[in-house]
Length: 302
Image (tube, rainbow, N blue to C red; front, side):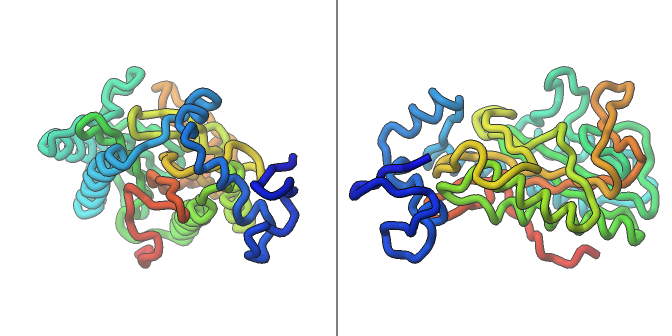
């Protein structure tokens, strides 16, 4: 495909006309389009993507701060011997006290206010009477709605002292999120995010879950576009400022295959290997990206 600048037609792999020395696709490709006053209309018409304005972004940030408060509260209280439903109670009560609503509760019939997924559980674990044990890993996924705006984030925590397999999968999952976030900037493509995640995880001998993906968020719980955590570079929708979506790679220590339990929600690894996930809500900016649910991805794991 050939794109036209103000001066002449330039191919994706040609030197950028701005003189940076970079290829056009790595520099100014798409910036003429980004400046188009009709971009919001175009992205909604073509992809049903709702770009966010400055007021929307500030509102999502406030919901994002609450999401991080919830995860911090869980981390401070997590201990062997507690039931996963205790996590749900903590998250639900703090969300309500903060003037917000837990988005998962009653979403498509989901019965709780948070997802808590242990060990071989990939995602959508329903809190209940399962007891946390020394050496477990627990992914906690929260989505508060504050003043009508959604923010989505998750972390995988150690319960007590982790073993070597737990340390590895949590490290790789966290690094996978970092790798995906690093690909977010205007004129990159959705496929660049998945490509970076897949390469990192598979180089470490792990696998990437295909069935569950990141998604647009902010005005609704789940919006376009979908953000796969695997794929090819230079494929998919071009990233533009104002896009807000989650990156939430689910990484398995073993094979990628999964199945859903009888509760019709909990996804587990078919080979019973450990699975871990980290998730943040990401805004595409003019310069690159900003996390609207920021937490430290470089802190010591334990």
